Length: 167
Image (cartoon, rainbow, N blue to C red; front, side):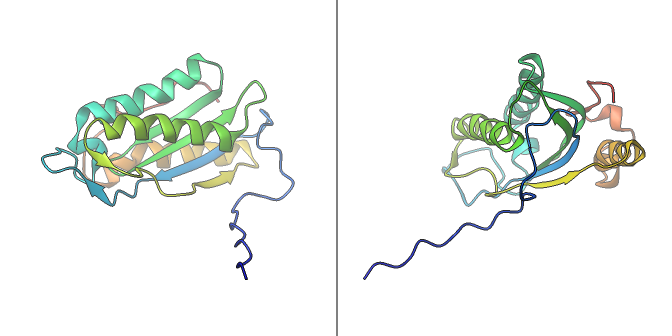
């Protein structure tokens, strides 16, 4: 007798349209590397800072999706092992699909630097903003992340942090 397929838990809001461009989302993507090839410069605990080229590729990919009019990026910060973004999907693109494409592209780049298997955790954390005043606090949180982690004294000194689109 075959076991029934286990239903995957979803953390998304039931019935919410994640392609509605009138919503702004605070998103966090975390890495979870289990293995790297022998001789790889990648530190599984800090893949983006241990391999600057990978960090630059992940950062450039955020801007690629902006240029493709897939999302507006109001704030973002790529940290050693995670990414924070304040984004709004555009042109009917679904947020989950966009983030999946982003993760897939960056994962393939990571394979070129010796990451074996998955780069990212299975899901992502998102928070739908309800008031514009919430956005200001979240932008400050995102930009101050490298300061709080002791990586820089001013967020503008962190190479993978910014506010490319106006709120």
